[in-house]
Length: 339
Image (cartoon, rainbow, N blue to C red; front, side, top):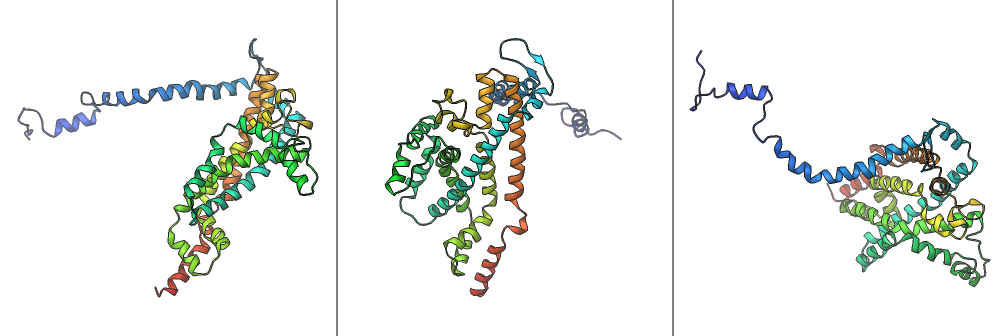
């Protein structure tokens, strides 16, 4: 059978199919991707140098005994073994968990309530949103110094307590006073940030759900917990995970708040403000045990991963559990409307 040729004398369809099957690329085909790749390459170079390499090197360093200047000495898993037997490390873990619980749980609840109030018809809502976000962009070092003055023995907090007839609290000298003062600083910094995240999630809820709750006679508390919270679970999950990650890496508050005590490396009296990251910083950059600090960092990574999974399981739930109250409200609203 004769081959059908195009006007130039080449096989019209067969040759083109052969070219595609052999993987040949028209001139400039792959080269057109080169300019965009070169345009975004600085990000990947910077990430490789300042992101990926430090992570990989810290893993390698966790198996070495190194003071930062001399030769490295391979010790294998001994760093992790020493870490598991370090009583100060486990004390810092306990302090971190207690501060995380005292700060994260009330902070997320307050943020949810503030977001719900902002979603209501309030005057100057934009000004409130800006005011709630300002603490998140304020220098934490400067604000920790301010809070240190507030929580001093003769500071503003104790002056208010004495004015109402109560005894002063050793905010910076007692166990729960130290943990409470650090937790209050964390709440002050992050409650507005999470409130704005919750507000964005609430504004994405269809208005008919609020109308159905209002028609059914639900008050504000019932609307919050029966309508808003079930549909806000993905946002609450995001806020819980990010708050857990940030809460288990507390450093600045304890380090600056007790800076008069050995340059802030002990976490205050009784080491009650000693957190995991503060202890890591003390070992690595104060005592120059970089291998030990790297091992501590990877153990902290494992703890954060475990708590993230726990938060995911507790907060996410199943799809069947998410909207039972909303479905009932909508059905009742439809019945009353005659639909």
